[in-house]
Image (cartoon, rainbow, N blue to C red; front, side, top):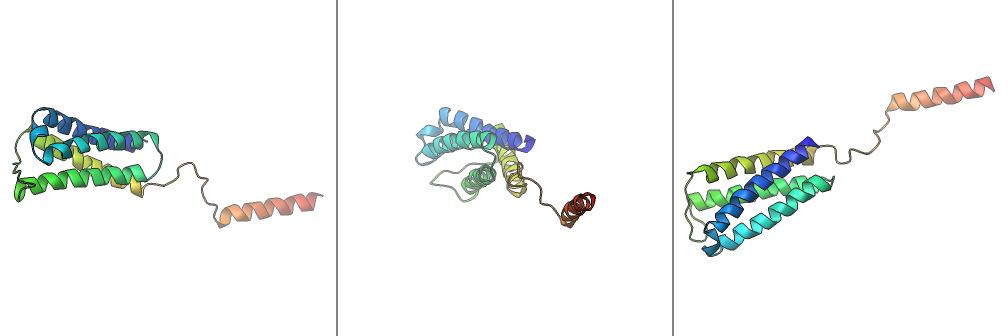
Length: 142
């Protein structure tokens, strides 16, 4: 459960940074501005799913969110993205990068976790052996 909260907080940290940057002027940038807004809305939805839905899919969404967001910034800072060229400088850049890396790691860990924690554990040969012995003991005492 803690891992779900870590992933949700990481996604929300990235959302907060992208929301602030959108309000601070990125909304006027062609294609990138609307992409920031989509990032914010989708990040909030993913964070809610992480906390409310006990399934592997929100973990996968968190990992994909982090990969896509960090990948888009990496493209923007190297070859450019839709005419925008950024640089690896400032708190927002490194704060978002760390949050997105945590979202990827926590999301992948959730995917690899037991998919149904409420399921009854499978019984091995020892469990079957105990049941056979119990039924034999009952028939002997009758």
